[in-house]
Amino acid sequence: MSPSPVPSPSSASAPPRPIRQAATLIVLRDGAQGLEVLLLRRAEKANDQNSGASVFPGGLLDAHDRGLHDFCCGIDDAWASARLALPAGGLDYFAAAVRECFEESGLLFAQDARRQQLLDLQGLSRGELAAMRAAAAAGTDALVALCRERGWQLAVDRLAYFAHWLTPPGMPRRFDTRFFIAAVPPGQEVEVDRFEIAEHSWLRPHDALDPARRLKLMNVTRRILQQLAQFASVDECLAHARGLRDVVLNMPRLAGGPGGARPVNIEEPAYAEIGYVDPEGRGHAFHTLEGGAVLALSPNVWRVTSSRVDASPGEHSYFVGAGTGGPWALIDPHVGDDAHAQALRAAAPGPVQWILSTRGHDAAQGAASPWRAL
Image (cartoon, rainbow, N blue to C red; front, side, top):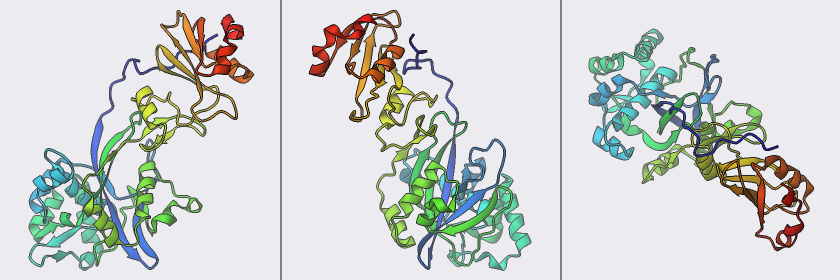
């Protein structure tokens, strides 16, 4: 008896999930033992796919970020848009990165327009600073008002564009996120909000990745930490980011396999196949080939992975036919492999009329093959 058909690339598409625009600021400093990065542990919340994760400061773009353009120094929207390969609105991402970092960590990348130097917020009382952050987080024009009243400018020219990631299809929420890096402003201390963020830490990227530390890291955070671990200092990392001519979009894809579903990154061997078989992330593609696994590459082509222990990677059998009514051709049945034979019998989508082989041994035994009975 054949298994239920696996959804194929021709299956009906589900309505696409909305993609929201976001910006993240990776804050760096030079520690006694090398480059350190600021990580914020998100508060535990129900129905939050990132609950309890260690992340960089960041969040969604806000309609009010456009109003911050007039208070951004060093770059304009035309330059920012060109850097982010956007037709317009690139400065929104720089402004949002600064705003979100201020809301979540208390670090404000801003300068006094008269003195042309980064702000030292230590002169403000904790109550005054908390009120500023609360107002900014409320989604009002509070940050615009602060800049206007105090003569501040957002130091967006201190940010370097570093990475671009898009959440995989199939996730409950999807974000198109631009990542920036910057050195921590001197004279400022991290003070998390205790609402969105539970605590903070400064860690070397290598230490943050150490399994013994048991940090909950999302795929994108882990990958960026791996990139940061290559740099010995903040200046070296900033120089690299500023020297990038193009920042490639990274969009992982979800796939199942041993241990359950996980994101598959663009350089992994399974990535292209997953994009073809399961472009919407519905969960029926595999990130690892397992013996006997059945996958419909299309309504007319079914693949069964070899169960042989000594089989080379990617060694498969295929059913090719006109539909469930048959007839079908079986290509490369691996004659003599009883376990694989059982998997093929279970997977056969219809009556097998032809047996073909790219291997001489299988072809020689084809006439006597038990597949004639299928």
